[in-house]
Each structure stands twice: as C-alpha cells, then as structure tokens.
Picture (cartoon, rainbow, N blue to C red):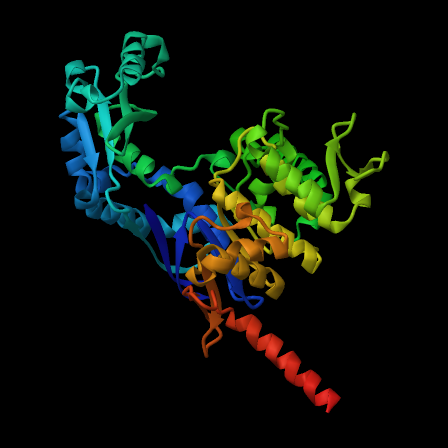
Length: 478
C-alpha cells in the first residue's frame, strides 16, 4: 500500500505531495521548507492516531466496518478502500491545526492536509473478530483456512483469559496475511469493545499512522553535533525549571513531567530525538543490524563507539587502544553516533527521518553513506532524508541507474567490480525524489522527479550550480 500525504499552504510550502514509506530523498535550497515538511511528516505519523477514534467521524464513514465486525470476519480490499480514505481525510481536515500544534508547539497556519491510499495489485487485509458476547462467530470459513498452528494459537488465547487486558468486554482482532493462497496469522490486537474496532482497523491498515513513540519513528535533526554536546544540560535545566514551577504551584505534576510548551524552544521531533539519546539502551542482541553497524565502523567512522565504565560513549579508532570522549572526536563521529544508536537500540524506529545526512562528511564518506542508505532501505527501514550535497545526490543516482536501468544489464557485474560496489549496494525498490523549488512569490512547491532510464534523476538545482561554477572558471582562464 502506498500512502501519499498532500499539504497546501503550510508555512513556506505552497503545495507538496509526499509518499510515506519506502525511501524518499528531499533536495532544495536553504530555507525552502524541507525541514518543515520532514517534521510535519513526523508529527502526522506520531500524533494523528490519537484522533482516529473520533466517534462522530467513525459513525459517519466506517459503518461498513462495524457491520462486518458483527459477522466475525472483516475484509478490506480495493472496493472498500475509498471510504477509509474519506475517513482519514475527514480526520485530517478536522484536526490539522491540532496536529501542527502538537508537532511544532506553535499555531502555524495550514490550509489543507489529505492522504491518498493506493493498494497494490491483489493486496487486501482480512481480520477475524473474537467477541465474547458471540464467541461462535470467529469460527468461520477464514478460521478454517488457517494452519493448525495458527488455530491452536487462537484457541489457546481464547481459553486463557489471563492474556486479555483488564477490559470488561475485550474484543480481539486476529489479522491474517493473505499471500500465494496461504492464510497466516500475523498480528493480534485488542479493542475495548466492538465499537472500537473500526478505528483500530484504520490504524492497523494505515500502519504509518499507528506509530507509538520511539518504536514508531525518529527524527534526526540537523546540527546533531551541537545538540549532542548540550542535550544533558538541556534536560537538567528543564527538569530544574519543571520542579521549581511545580513546587510554586504554577504547573501540575503531569505538566512538570511532560512539558509541552513553546517555552521549550524546540519542536516535538527534536525533543523526542534528545529524549531518545538520553534514554538510549544498548541492545546486545542486534544481530539483524550487525552488518550495518560493521559497515559504519569500517567504511565511515573507521573505529568503534563504545560505552565506558561511567556509562558514557567514547570513540576508539581502528588499531588504537586509547578511548576518546566524543567531545574530542571529529564532528563526523558525533553526526553518525545517533544512527549507530538506532541500529543498536532495544526498540528501533520503523521510520527514520534524517535531515541533512551529509553534514560533516567528506565527499568520499558521503558516497559510502549512500551505500549504507541503500542497504538499510533494502532491509526494510523506511526513510526520508534531505541533502544539500551534489555528491550525495549523484551517488544515489548512480546506484539507481545500476539498479534499474535495463541498458546496463549486460555490463552491470563488470561495473560493480570496477567501482568496488556489490549487489548489496543496489536498490531493490524504486525511490522517491522530491525537489523543493521557489515560485515568483518566494514560496516553495514540491515536485517529485521522474526516473529516466538513461540519466536517472535530473537534479536540476545542483546542475545549475555546477554549470555556473564551470562558466565562472572558463571566464577566469580565458
């Protein structure tokens, strides 16, 4: 399923349509609105889910889901997707200002937000519903098509009442994956009652909106080095201020523990990033990401980031015995440390939004980072990144040409060998490239660049700068 978020009249952004999911690259001049859009994407994914239970909107748009729930089986396919899209857009229209306020802590004007949902061919979702008032209804044709192992899992859950949350009348949704004529249980969800089923189903199907805290998405802001140097002092100062205000009676206890005021001076995505860094817990069992960690250590930082006896991160260069505190290490080390934390954290985000990825990286290191991005994308990481670097853009473009150009089929292996690349560096899925361009009034509109079989993506903003330098050099040398 593809989810495209549309934005109109938001800050400097006149219009934008951006895909959620996959791998997206944002390019554009400074002050063109890239960071605004990236943080809004974060805010929509994190904050929208709490508004999906709007009773009036559910009753208006999701009646079919409620009717299907009564039968014990729910099917969502292309024929029933239109009203789900209508529901999401009604929620966005009603709560768009609140979502912006939740994200930026400022009432930034926004004209419109909407989504477009597109299902892949033959993509659909099926759910079994266990309702304790009518326990026989889940035993239907879909249940009988499941494997014996899946049936036993469901039956055990129903027999063992201890697994249910402390609800008076819990309903359970068993999501079934349908692929190659096989039906397998893939996820189990709980509802307070049958009335909650429609909004829960919307969260499950539009999975990008179902993110919960750090396990859902993480925004890596620009100027990471400076933030990492100061984040402990920031939280110490905010804690002191919260305690002082709470003691003086200016804040309630909850407000002091969870400050959400523009007085913080940072947005919610940046605050959550700092919280992630402060509360990072090293997961020793990260074999799935060990190849990525090793790639960063060998190809980018040429060393390791360790945790010393004081529980502080330190850098150890390849072949060196001495460990250096991060403030004595290069800015490149500090810029990449959050990525290593993500790869080694207990709960990894499924959506990584990475602003100015090339910061403090030499062009050679930028090309290595492009390889890492491709590998992470192929492994299932959803990412949106921004860059000002023509080197980064050119390397990503070359990887796309090697990955998707039919013209290179006969000589792809030889090119990989000569360039020191491997099949692992090639993209498995097409990427989305968005160029932020100014109109005559100084506002920005976002244009998705089309992929060309011969030239790849035309990064015209970079081409114009390079051409201007070339003409300047020619004039000097004449």
